[in-house]
Image (cartoon, rainbow, N blue to C red; front, side):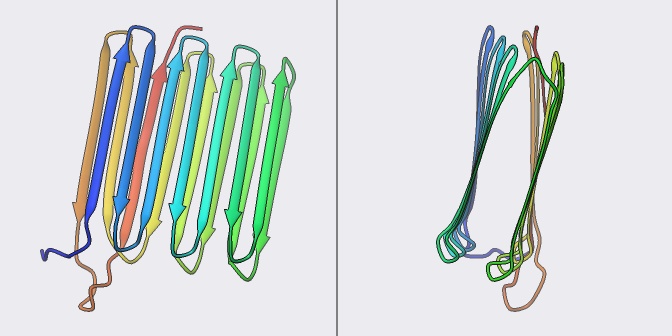
Length: 209
């Protein structure tokens, strides 16, 4: 296995304080200039999820924020692409009713595809976000399922030039916290062409309703 000039840094900090859980995960990759930040804050009846993805070369920024307070659900999605000048914002407020939302955006020049589906049935909330960018070969999938006391989050990122695998699993059971992280690097081509696969497994958070 050869070592490359490209630097990869992964930082994971977890802070648990009785009913409060804060998680921050940052990933930096200099050569491909990919930055991913995921923060999760939980306070009994409140769940906040923020996801930001920055890719300087292709200038793609994606931000997703979810706030849940007992009977209220707010979802905001913003997409900014400087070259093609595409901006998308979606806000949803939910109070004791069933809501289904699907958003699909296709832009040929910048080759950006965004799909967002939201299904809410009283106690269940499912959110799926997929982003495909052919030139930079970046794929992002976010799945969130909420069933009263269970929260599941899945994030997968694939980047062909480099190869990186990261798996994070967090479980919160009052006094128990388990975190697992794995990284794998491998060589693909002679001309320093790498394939990167960034996979944030499942973040399962159980809390009292």
